[in-house]
Image (cartoon, rainbow over all chains, first blue to last red; front, side):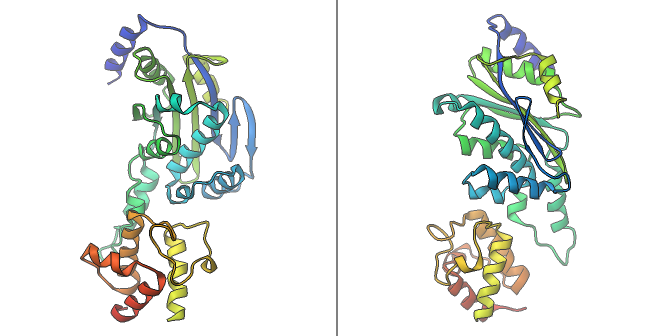
Length: 221
Length: 85
């Protein structure tokens, strides 16, 4: 898979114009960092459910469907919400945006909850609301609905954060005119151990779109 | 019947994650779908599971759900008549 992407990237690099990162956002240890600045910091003792609920309420977001999402989707949704609110893109640019996310645990956090509901033959009550989240890419669907994003979306599962792959994939999408912007990153959760890092690749922005900068900002939380 | 209605409201709020609602916000005759509580098709499936798990009622015909999940009052009436546990 990576080889195909590299070929696609090399072909597209002939037309290459320099790309930038418009904004970064990370969630970890009950803190939110936006473009290098801590914008939210809550007590470390809060569970992810409590933390995400507090962030949702304090942000003044009116989107009741949030409470029906699984934790991976909540993390994906909130990270994108903070980042895209800061970028204030017009709706026609959002429509052409692609989403490229990745993580290590796929949807294991919710898969386990689903497994528990079907564990015993005597108490076999699978919850449809849990089952619909047993794929990691569902979080991208939630972002797309919320922000009316209609570009390509892809979710990759890696052992660890892979800045090089994300960089090449998003550059190929923009250089091949498949997208005007790419919302990229990492969203991983297993129980209360969570970490998200998203950034918006664009033709404008303060930061240069490079593997070194992506890795540096990923490590910044 | 009043106890059952109250219990249904509490269960629906908890199981369908209706964080913006309290028991007092739901009137017995409020529509559960559409303009009322705004429940969706996944919620309808959750309600079918809830009927089976909590009251021993198995709905096999989806059309039945449409008639039963009109409001708390209608749902409570149906459960009171058909419950096996």
